[in-house]
Image (cartoon, rainbow, N blue to C red; front, side, top):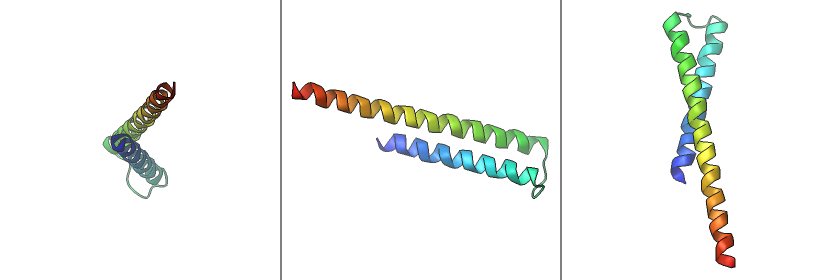
Length: 74
């Protein structure tokens, strides 16, 4: 259970950091070299995927717990 929450937290943080870097490049607060664009894009995509894996795993674990509890009642 703790691992899924950690995945969601890390994924969300990576998503926000990537978005902030891209936003800062658009506003020309920081320079926009091609390597930084690619790294920011990769961090954003990987953060999204990691967060979604954490959410899906969390849902699967909770569904399994509820199914096990329902079976114990009958």
